[in-house]
Structures are given as C-alpha cells and as structure tokens.
Amino acid sequence: MATFSFTLATLSLSSSSASFTPIRYPCRQQRLISSPRLPPPPLKCSSYGSEREPVPEPEPDSTVVSISGSSDWTYKLTAGIAGIGFLETSYLSYLKLTGSDAFCPVGGGSCSDILDSDYAAVFGVPLPLIGMAAYGFIAALGFQLVTNKFPFGINKSNAQLTLLASTTSIAAASSYFLYILTTAFPGSSCTYCLLSVLFSFALLFITVKDLGLPETYKQLGLQLFISSLVILTLNTSYAYSKPASSRLANIELPYYATEITTSSTPFAQSLARHLHSIGAKMYGAFWCSHCLEQKEMFGREAVKQLDYVECFPEGYRTGTKMIKACMDAKIEGFPTWVINGQVLSGELKLSELAQLSGYSESVEPTS
Image (cartoon, rainbow, N blue to C red; front, side):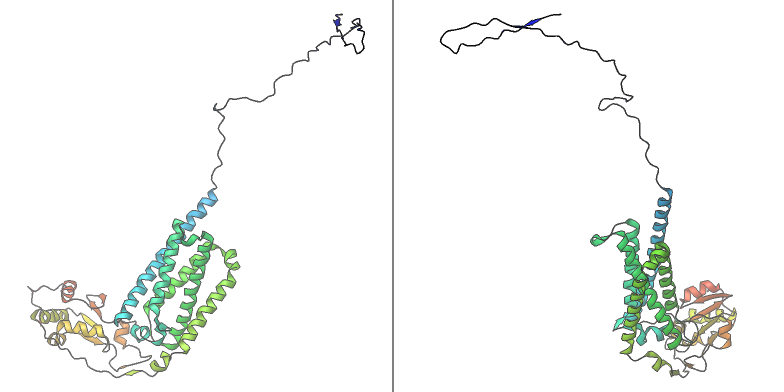
C-alpha cells in the first residue's frame, strides 16, 4: 500500500509564530479495472468519396407512359381535325367576302342559298369567320397540349378544360344549325355544313374520351351552361333578323335559256363533236353559274353539238327534285361530266376534257 504525504502550512495570525507538524493521510490508489472489449458494431465504415453500393432506381410506371402516349396521340388528332375545319371555313370565308358562288350542292338546292341566307351571319359577323376562329383556336390548343407549352402561365389542367369548353360550344352550335338546315331548308343539302357538323362532334367525342367520363361528368354543369349560352346567343341573333325560310319557302325560278356570248374556236367545235361521238354527257342546271362558264369555254356553236342534260327543265322551287336521268346518274353537283363511265365534277378546261376523253387533233371525229 503506497502512502501519499500532504503537508498543510498555515500562516500565523498571532504575534508569536507556531509550526505545525505535517499530518500524513493515507490514500488508497484506485485500481483501474479493464472492461472486456466489445466487438465492433456490424456497420461498414467508408470514407467520403469511397465507392458505395449502387441503389437501384425505381422503374418507370408503364401505365403512366402509356396514358401519356395515348394523350399525345389524342391531341395530335384534335389538332389535325381542327386544322381541316380551319381550312374549310377559310375557303367559305373567302367565298363570303368575295361574293363568289360555292360548288353547287346535291340536287334540289344550292349551297349559295344557305351560305347567303340570314342564318349565315351572327350579329352581322359572317358565320364562316366565326368557325375559322373557333377551329383555329382548337387547333392551336391541341398543338400546345402536345408540346406541353402553354401561354399566359396556364397549366395543363386549365388547357384541357378550355379545350372541353371550346369543343362543347362548336358542337352545340352545329346541333342548332343542323336543326335549321332540316327545318328551314327542306330538300336542300349543304356538304360544307354537314362536314362542319362531323368535325365538331368528332372533336367533342375525342376530348371527352381523353378526359374520361368521371372527369367529364364533373364538368357537366359547365357544358350545359356553355351549350345554353351558345343557343341563346344564336336565337337572339336570328330573332332580330328576318328568317331566311320566309323568303325561301315561296321561292320560284321559272326555267330560262342561258345565252352564250363567246364564239367557238375550231378546236372547241372539233372537241364537241368528239365528245358527242363517244357518248359523253354534261349535266347541269340553268341557274348554275359554273355551268354557264363551262358552256362559254366551248362557245355558242360548239355547245349545240354537246350532249347537255338539264336537270331542272321545268324550273326550280323549294323542294323540287331533279329529273330521273340526273338522279339515275347520281349527280351530286353541277356541272358534272360523265365520260367513258367516269364521273367528273366541276368545270374542266378544254385541254383536260380532250385528255380525259382520248381526243387527238390529228384524228377528226366523225360527225
């Protein structure tokens, strides 16, 4: 046992100094008890920057990828159909602004009667211009949904709702015009109108299919509100204008012979004799301006040698049907040529008629 000496000295507080004998205190030195060594924890220690085991990345959800691809295809189809509608309404807008005649319709009526009626404008704005703006907007919106780039800080959800509202509005307008077409213009047909109805309903169907029925059902109130607003707007517009049906219900055009003012060239006369010799026929209507222009190409002498079929020899009135010969030939517009069994619609240049009929100037047709 070791001992430790500790001396305590004190200062004398009195006048006489005193000394103290040092006192020895025994002190036991504590023994350091070594604890048993514990095994290291089962952790792998690695320095910064050392290689780590790669963490597997989660695989992409195939369902999300397929839905995204389906949406892109849907938006591309939407932009494509709306683009075609934009081109159609652009053509009709050109006809409306220039006063030109549209291609004549399927028997009994004329596209010009419908496109020039009071129903062809909404509060004075030509309907084709409104359609052109609507189709152009939908086409642009479909393209933006494909690229995921939206203006004015809107997100994809808002863009989809805007697309649903736009397609609902044009489908509602098309339904209204389809009702007008069947009630105010009986017996008439407008190919451009029917195409627009087809485009608008196709766009609405594609949009609803992309959103899904549950989401579309949530927006049913919005769709009903938009449809009601569109129909109310059209009704109000036409209430302040004289209905076209009141004028067209009693329309009557007595038959009149058209006068050809141009003279025939030798080529035109020779071609007319050739067309007659092979049994080619031209179907037309006395009130059709395109038919008159086709006759002017031949001239007054050559026209007399053509096999021309007048589809309305008794005149035209609302609901009048074409004669049986024109209906049997399934004439869909004027003028129409039937050459060697081939049906050709619209005006054709003399050179085109010569090529289609196999005419050669070196061979003079028999009279």
